[in-house]
Length: 219
Image 1 (cartoon, rainbow, N blue to C red):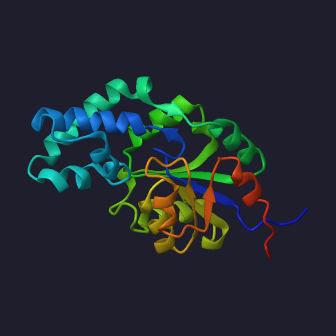
Image 2: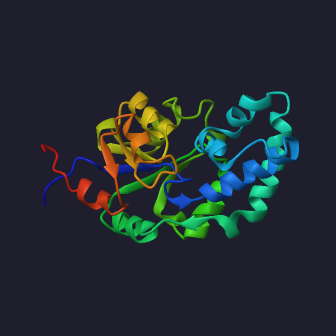
Image 3: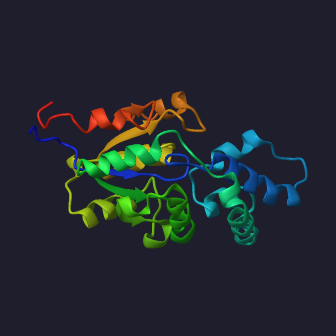
């Protein structure tokens, strides 16, 4: 059997494995429309997909950010299962990767509790040996800290993993950590946006990973 160079896959979660884009957009609009009726549009919310909540809300009003985060979390939790959707083929492909012996991890800017809720909704929590949420780190992506933490927990080398995500933070974080990166074309911000950050791979469907992991060591 040919030895393959990739042993582990690190996934962002929101917008990568679970389609929470509508949930995130509606939650931000709910919070901000109460403060600024009619000021913000759906398109205005797109830059908030990816960064931490404190970064997003502080960009509008740092003094009110903490209060807005509390309101965000309450509304988001209440509507999570209603608005979050599975991207095509995610669960089946993750199961195939797991069966092939590929080790899986989550590296997310989301808090651990709602992250686990999303994984349970997909029915894939048991497939991931490592979960790094914002609760476990001091610095979020694009800082390399969460990615390096996941790699260390998995006891893998940098050249054995790929960081996969739907946002610039995922690609930049992977590059800052010294690992290969993959963007997902189903990103709410679009494939062209992600290509601007020069990922090593661009996935047009999650099943593209099945071919990538078969690349031999000396490819």
